[in-house]
Image 1 (tube, helix red, strand yellow):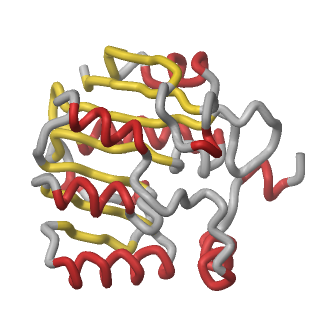
Image 2 (tube, one colour; image 1 turned 90 degrees about the horizontal axis):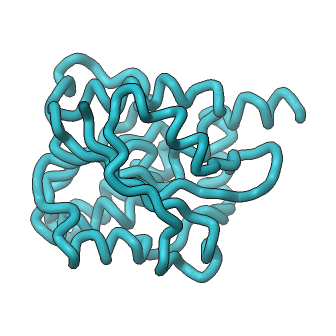
Image 3 (cartoon, one colour; image 1 turned 90 degrees about the vertical axis):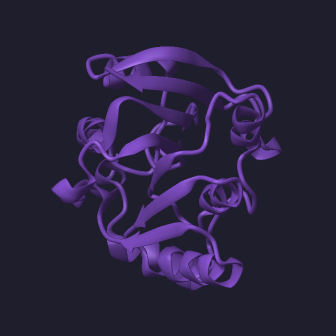
Length: 202
């Protein structure tokens, strides 16, 4: 594994993807399992955090359905696109241009819900403990992380493979695992490759 693959992409690497329109991870729509979660009332409107939001399809969908959303990404291309959409549609969403791991204390125990979609697999596996701690810090006690975790079945990355065991090991200390199953209605290109997790902060 090369040093780049071990450590994940730099901010400049991600920005190059936006500059070149090379957005292979972008489904072009909200991931269908999140629609199902809302329709089944497993997630309900509240203060919601979306780390590594990218072009923000989940952000837009949730904001249109009554969620008070704060989206975070450090790629200028992602943030400028999403800010324009939010402004055009007059949505109740805040888009922060920053490194998610540097969220300040004003965000501590603020959110009812965090949405995980293609961020956990995009960061280096060495950063996963920091991801878990940062999400837990931002959520209220009893707050929920609803996530789709990408099981690529391949070495290297990004995207970095995430197994069911990886999720259990990463989150069990700070979260109660309420649901962890293979997503049933993933987008076609991710069919049978996503774990759907409902995790509640202890």
